[in-house]
Amino acid sequence: MLPIGALMNAGAILVGGALGLGLGRYLPEAVRTCIFQGLGLSVLAVGIKLTLQSTSPLILITSLVCGGIIGGLLRLEERMTAGSLWVKTRMRCKNPRFADGLVLSVTVFCCGSLALLGPLDEAVRGDLTLLSTKSFLDGLTTIAFASVYGVGALLSAVPVLLYEGSLTLLADALARFIDPATVTELSAVAGVMTIGTAINLLELKHIPLPNMLPALPIAVALASLLR
Image (cartoon, rainbow, N blue to C red; front, side, top):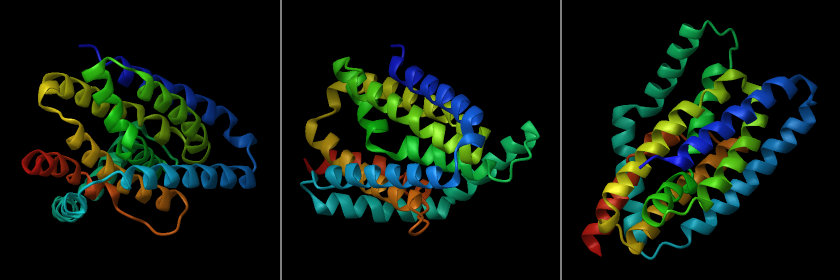
């Protein structure tokens, strides 16, 4: 199947990034700060709501702890940052915040709950509502990110397309094995990571969210085994 939602999401990020690059110099610092704080609080509220849906704290905690250990040993955040710097070098970009913008954007757009549930909905039910909503939100968010971080935020469209597109195709192939309980626990783990994204956006503390990505497949495996 063609991952329409992933293509739509990547397109929204490109459009939002282009607008952010063009309008960035006209946005006062106070306005940018307000935008990031508003996004951070909104993401926090979404993350809390999703996390509270979990019916098994054991799966939630085990997934995050084990996932964090695996991701830390694999140094996923360091590798993502190194990859971003490699892209920056190849593009001969002089913006010192390029890597920060690319890593932050990819983390925000890929670690949230909608990035998981949207492809599932498209593949299992043929419903694009979640990914349409995510595309609109990501487009607006990229305007703010690009105004601060430059082209690094705009380039996040590529990993988002690959990530969501792969999830859609995988979910389509495994649709008959996916049950609601597994989706609920997966959403709860993604919710905790969404809360971490909010904390990073609000600059309360840096949380290495890429290191926690292995928690997602672990949650699926545990939920499937314990159902």
